[in-house]
Length: 434
Ligand SMILES: Cc1ncc(COP(=O)(O)O)c(C=O)c1O
Image (cartoon, rainbow, N blue to C red; front, side, top):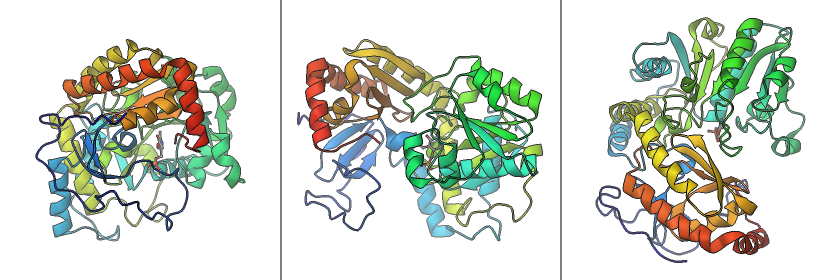
C-alpha cells in the first residue's frame, strides 16, 4: 500500500524544509557496524507525532524512537533549550559544577516522591538506560559490601547491552555470544514471588532488579501484588528493591513512574529514554542512605550530567509537568486501548497508559508492522505475535483515531492466511524485529 497520511492540523506545524539526507538516493551504510537489521526507511525530520522520510513521505509515529520522544519530535521548548545551552556552555566535565544538573536531580527526586514533595534521594546522571542500570548494579554491590554482590532479575527482562546490564537481562540468546558474563546475576520467572523468595539468599544477594512492566518482552504486566510482594521480601531480608523504569518512567504508564500504580517505595529507580526527549540522558536515583554508599571516585561518567544534556532534561521535565503527561497518557491510552480491542485479529491488549501491546492471533505482528510502515504508521513488534504502541504522550485524539483507521483495515486484510504469507516473505528478506 502506498497511501500517504494527511498532515494533521496542529501535529505537523509549519512546513519544515527538507533536512540533510533528504532525497531518494540510496545511502552508503558500509562504514557502519552491522549491529542492526538493514532499515527499510530513513527518516530525516520530525515534528510532533509526524516523521518524514528521505523521499518526503510522512508517517504517524506511534513508537517514539522506542519510547524516547515522549513530547513528540522537535518539541519547540526542548529544541530551544538545547540550542540556547549549546550557544552558552555544552560541557565542562564533572571536575567542575554546572548550574543545571542539581535542579534536574531535585525535580526527579520530587517526581519519584509523587510530584509534590522531595522524596529525599539522590541522582547519578548517565547517558543511557544500560548505564543507569550499570550504576544501580555497582551501587548495590557497594552498599551491600564484600560477599553480598548478586542481583536477581527476571527471565525475559531487558536491562541493557553493556556486560553487567546484559548479565541482568534475562534473555539467553542475547547473552550467549558474549559468555562469560560477569558473575553474580541470577534469574527467576517474572511475576513469580515464590521463585524470587527461593532465589533471595540474603547472604549473597544485594538487590532485586525488575521492570514494573516488561517492555521489550512484549509489554508484560505483572499481577497487582507482585511489586508489593517484592518490596516486603526485600525489606525483610535487607535486600535492595531496584526498579528499572527506563521504558516505563516519566509519565508513560499514566503515573510518573510505573511503581507508583502500586504504592510501593523502591530503594533504587533507573530511567533514561524519555528524560531528554531524544537527547541521550540516563539517571539512577537512590534513597539517600543507599546513595551514601558511593564515595568520590567510586563511579563516574565524562558526559553524565553535562549542561547540554541537563538542559534538554530540564526543559523536557518542565513541559511534562505543565502538560501533566501522566494524566494525558492515562486518557489517551484508554482511547487507544479501546480501539485496539475492537480490531480484527487482536486477542488481547495489555499495558498501561501509552505503553500498550496488541497480542495478535497467529503471529502476524511482524508482517503487520511492515505493512503499517508502508501505510505510514510507525509501530514495532517486540515479539513475533505482539504489536507495541508507544506514541508521544502529547498525542491527540485525532492522531489515535488515524492510527486505528490505518491499522484496522490492514489487519482485516492480512488475516491469518495473509499474515502467514507475509511472514514468510519477511523471513525470506531476512528482516527481524528488534
Ligand atoms: C527496561 C529497559 N532497561 C534498559 C534499557 C536499555 O536502555 P539503553 O538502550 O538506553 O541502554 C531498555 C531499552 O530498551 C529498557 O527497555
